[in-house]
Length: 287
Image 1 (cartoon, helix red, strand yellow):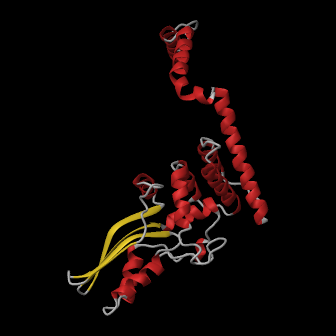
Image 2 (cartoon, rainbow, N blue to C red):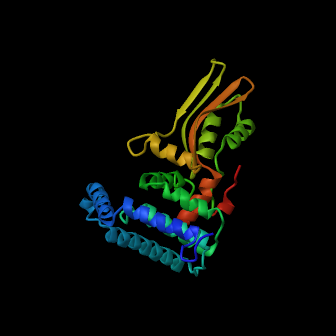
């Protein structure tokens, strides 16, 4: 039986563990480790003049700017903010504060998401914050370009009151079945362009042929030009915000129709709505 003067086994173990830790990692060694880590990271930060306290302050500055922009949007819209759930707010602040203040497009997107969450919170907004944290300014700008494609032709000034359907292989197949005329393939291609090259989608190319006897082709847009590359589209596609369709093929009788396009998904339209305030998703026909 243990003596009353001896500590219990658990206490012995705690004392031993503390002694072992102290023996393995003395305070002066720990100090040297911190110094080494500081030296290692300095080349990545010193041009910006960043130290730990400055990084913290810059993250706070970003959050303050996001909050200011969110309040401004709500003021313009005549709305009052409501509290948002902690489950959304805490990861939102953690992710949003990592942005650079000069990334104005992305910072404003965070502000719009906060404003949207404070007025009409939806559980999917938690996912929106994760998606936005994986986007850079180039992806955000491409999404903006996609949302505003052919906006003037459709007479859309503010919002998406006349927003298009979300383009998919299903909606294109249905259009091909209902609108293709054997006697006038050129007319069909023009109608296809008018229907699907619009806000929310960009047509790249289309081919219509009849077992090699007749061949009609259209080149619409080079989405992989100087301003954008495959990387932007692949990132957005991987996040389920847009769909990059290459050579989607449809058949009707002896005719084959193939097209390539970039289009917002239904999820992408909701995401863009929350992060820009530009789309009324109730007006979008999700096919």
